[in-house]
Length: 480
Ligand SMILES: [Zn+2]
Image (cartoon, rainbow, N blue to C red; front, side, top):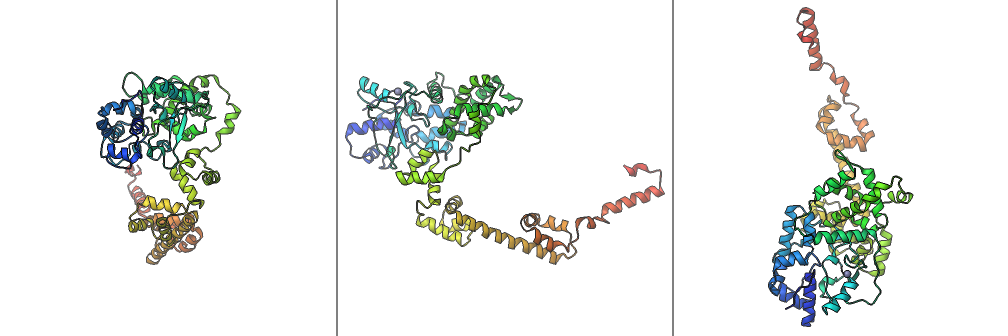
């Protein structure tokens, strides 16, 4: 049996085992260990660790803490979530993927390639005679080896994904590129400190941010010094678009405001990096550099659908396209469908047809056994259909609300506008906004509010008071 190497991932152990047995397909190994042919082993948050531990006669907790990124991630998760993450990673029969509980829609969750350091690999061959994948290199956004400060290399298995094959790193003969990016170097330094710190206690992130903000005068009573934070963000991030995609300025401020709200752990790591890097610079800079001002108003989140479609046409892979533009897979797919690059499936076409006929999304969802969210998503692939449905909805509302007003006037010929409003408030204001002329033309017969106020109980009360005062001048109490 194989022994685990320092900081080796579970995927790496399986890959080395696979290669030592000379098996013909990954399915054979999956069947031996997991009891099924199809299994995708996550590079740093794998599931079914207990099965792997049992197979190799290892301790599952040792695997969890020393051979996955659990120890780094759990420090930034609310307690409940970190417990669920642990359970999902260890258990044998869990349907949910562990990474799904960490900001499930984040593109930071999907590893389509596996990374390694060329220096580590060469040294491993010299010392151990084998190469292996290290857990720390697999962290999203990290592109530098924390030990050797050189750029990591990546292995991309195409759309099938490297996770469906068992591969081992190959020593590269290309010259190593040293990393000179401040952000990457600080980022890797923070990661290694947190992952290998001596006490196993979680970092108290809330206290850490509070102390930091107080120390650098970034907080007055309860409000944050947004001008300074904005500058800190720009100073650190202005050359790093991929980091900007992962953590927008808005998210950065939200994290500082609500450190305990659930957010992807890598976003906390980035926040720590920004604070650490810019703290000293911010003290000295008083004038905002022009270059940064120019960048400030550029929308980082806007996605150029034309370049996405042309990139996809060249490479033919959704995964690669989404990775290249730092856009989630779902969004990439949507853009490609909207642009007509990918055809709709028969199911999607049926949904669109039903939507075209004006069926409510709930009805379509029920009829086809799909979720409402999925129906909405399919409809959104067709911008013309969305427009068409908006018009249909407008017409339906217009017809319904006008009818309500006319029925009310017919039933209450002496009613007032005030009464009408109190009876059908929402409908009245919808018409007020969208069909103003129609509303005026049809409600002019109703009495306006001020005339209807005369002779109300208030007026009568006033006259009674006057009457009493006239006849009983000593009872001044009534005046108050
Ligand atoms: Zn290295």
